[in-house]
Length: 197
Image (cartoon, rainbow, N blue to C red; front, side):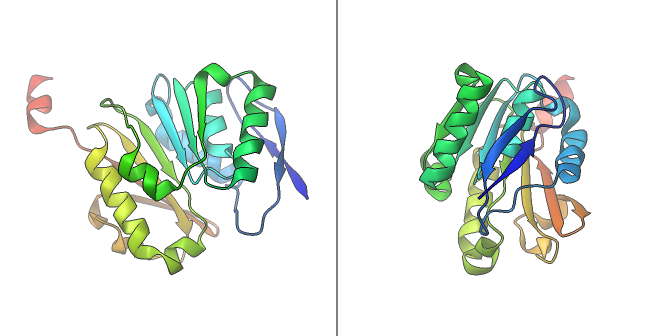
């Protein structure tokens, strides 16, 4: 079965894409996606964007539509990776995107991340938080260490997940939208960078 994914704003505003319906994958509702990109605002244009546990790719495609320099989709499931490739061909954005059919944890450990500010969105199936929380925590900690100062890391979870269990709990901006919870973390600039501005 399939459903229609709509891009909300930007270059591809209003475009609809056919997406696989899978009970394990929870596409971000339109209003939550709109809220996320309203929060990120000026941090989107001209930056690379990583959509991890990409699934339908709705978040990464929205980022590209809104001016992201390049989007990398990390998705282990071959069906979703193939569907993403089809969307990329349909939108003719192959030169601005990359689909990595890879395990998100392995990517976090070994994948190349630019040494410049980027946006990383991590939206695992909610069951991952229950069954593999230690792995999720490790992934988040690893990204926090590897990302360049000024980068933004966003985690999507069910609203019942206790975000105070995340590394650096007090540093996250928490937002709740119905059943969906977003935790947004900005990697601080080093003290000498503040002194130079």
